Amino acid sequence: MKKELRIDATLIEGGGGIFDIYADDDPVYLKSETGEFPDDQDVVRMLKERK
Picture 1 (cartoon, rainbow, N blue to C red):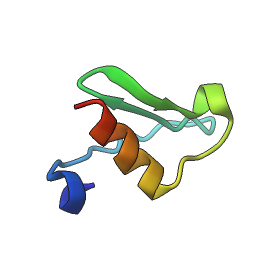
Picture 2 (tube, rainbow, N blue to C red):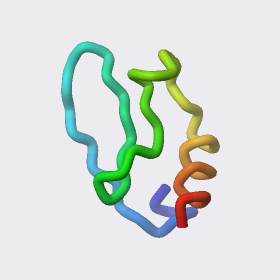
Picture 3 (cartoon, rainbow, N blue to C red):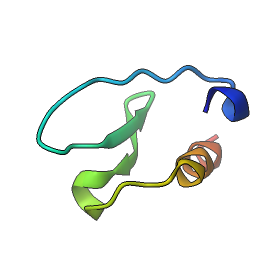
């Protein structure tokens, strides 16, 4: 993400298998809804689409 989007990501550790991605407090990807982990390219694509 840093290389392609020039952003710094912050990991907020939690528990229970939660893996949700937010940008500016807006949900970008919610594993809690899909039940699956996104691959790296999907995350980059989703972040690019929200611009």
